[in-house]
Length: 238
Ligand code: MLT
Image (tube, rainbow, N blue to C red; front, side, top):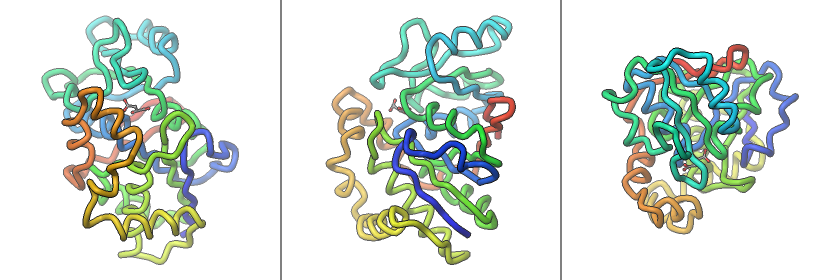
């Protein structure tokens, strides 16, 4: 297996994804939210790039069947039903609903994957399920979403843990960034919170009152839910 690791959404060569398996990672918080929402019974998620696209998409669905979800600067978008806190996506709220979602980086990374063969939604929450699914793929891309065009260590450590877990099954051939993140993960996994103490986006979330979201998103292997994004119909389902 050949594994390429991309540090942030815009860094990916979209055309080169043709035929490859991609894992989109946005630990804080978009992919953790998607996993949680589908675990709690959401029917499907439609990721879009902008607020206007989300509103246009909502017109295609009957009132009461969908929820508009997403954030800008980590805050709920005005007039939307939900923001981007995984703790909002409870079973009572999302069961059976179509979630139309736009986030700053996570949905952007997903939209970059239109040429890929398979696209999985990964985070610490479902890490083992992801590895189990991709371990036989010949070419895998770990697409860290990052934050506003920059690498974010929460995503990088998740990529490092995926690489370490893959090594329990095979010897993946990886690029320089993959080697770096694997080493960083190995050096920091025993003191995870310490390793993330200077992570910009994590601190931004904490400073804005989302400490509980951070705690939630950093939990490992709490679910075997495996969301898949189908670039042809633009939907994420389990
Ligand atoms: C994103 O997609 O940029 C994030 O999930 C931002 C956030 O933490 O809300």
